[in-house]
Image (cartoon, rainbow, N blue to C red; front, top):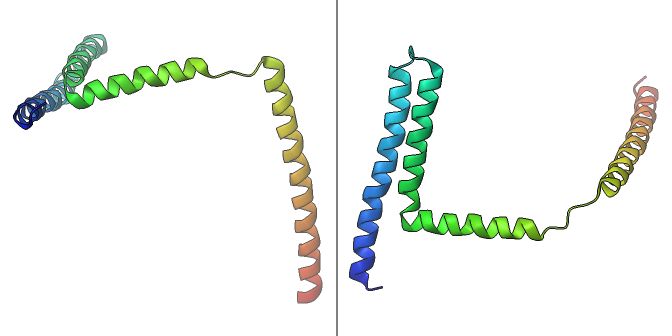
Length: 122
């Protein structure tokens, strides 16, 4: 891209972000203004405004890069090898056992040090 094209794109991106901010402000102020209306209507309007604001935001350069990042993250999540139920249960039991042993050791050390301090102090 030429610098002139990038400058125009960034200028249009600024207007798009201002439109997103305006939609969010309209949603917040409208929700407050129409607080007496049924909640269903307010939620539906807020969902529509959020969808429109999201669509406008995705038309910007940063929005497109965010969408690409989200797609790549989803692809990476699919590559993860998740543990089986048995592996998860065994790991959980090991963690609980270690926590209990450490709790007993720390309780014993605390009791011993408390007894030693009470002997020294009087």
